[in-house]
Every structure is written in C-alpha cells, then in structure tokens.
Length: 53
Image 1 (tube, one colour):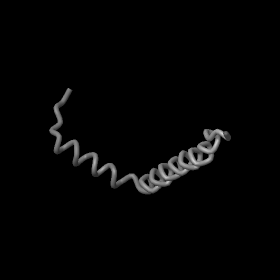
Image 2 (tube, helix red, strand yellow; image 1 turned 180 degrees about the vertical axis):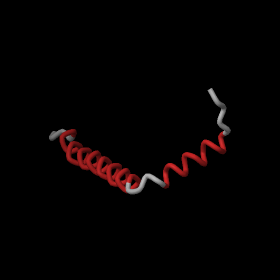
Image 3 (cartoon, rainbow, N blue to C red; image 1 turned 90 degrees about the vertical axis):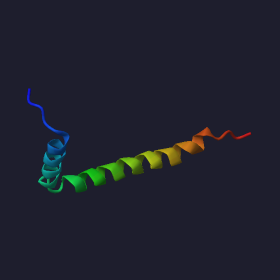
Image 4 (cartoon, rainbow, N blue to C red; image 1 turned 30 degrees about the horizontal axis):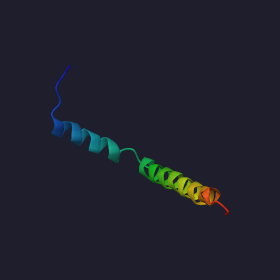
C-alpha cells in the first residue's frame, strides 16, 4: 500500500470536487428540503403535546 501525503490527498479531493458539476447544487437542495421537512414536522407535531386542562 502506497503512502500518500495529506497535501496530495487534499489536492486530489479538491480537483475531484470541481469536476463533479451540478452535484453541489443537488446536495444543497436535498439538505434544505430535508431540514424543511423536519422543521415542518416539528411545527405540526408540537401542537399535539399540549394538554387541554
């Protein structure tokens, strides 16, 4: 197994990230969508915790 210095590994990772294209936009859209679903669920379900005394 070859040893790769950390600087070389980081450079290769940065180059690969630039070649991915629209992947970053898709990740952002998915993260925002998931967070929106979680916040909407929390907002809707928090009303069921209240007790009507």
